[in-house]
Picture 1 (cartoon, rainbow, N blue to C red):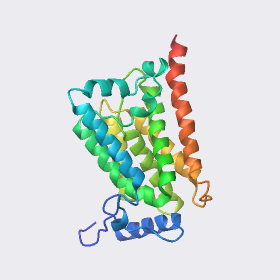
Picture 2 (cartoon, rainbow, N blue to C red):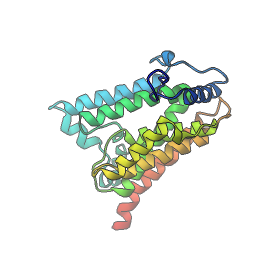
Picture 3 (cartoon, helix red, strand yellow):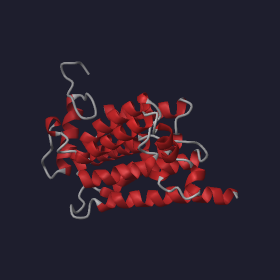
Length: 252
């Protein structure tokens, strides 16, 4: 896209047809009104702001010499610890990070995708989609790397990517012809090509986020729509817990 034609969007520069299609997709979710890029402030995206604040505070605690080791060791996802009853690790691992680059990239992606998705589906539904991606990522990480220490919001980020692509598909776009689709492909290549990256966490989050968006639907009753992605998140929580407990039982 040449600089003169590109249109800024919450997911990066888009060509004019893609930008208009995305605007129409978000508008349809809002009953004909789409928030503009300028209106995507903290007031309009409270869940995104709270999630970013939690990630930032926990990273500061991880970086402090007095609390760093304790916070990290007590919160990362680790299968044997889950089996021993430390169920909170199913959630807390999705908010902790290993290093500045790790938290910086995930924080940036959450900021960008949060402005897009929370504005499109509403704060309550967005929270359910994010939770589904996080817990789906936890389940995938436990399934493929049960005895490893894993952490990071990338499972939830992949969940938001999956949900955004489903939203585009529902509104008649070709998601893999957009910059968002290409971003997903690039990140999947990175996931499988770079050692030490949680394949299960990324793929599990992607599938769970996409499923939550499918469950939400484009014309769900506003009074019940938030319960649908939350239901997917609840299923992912049960699956993650079952994997965390069941694998040890099977091995024992």
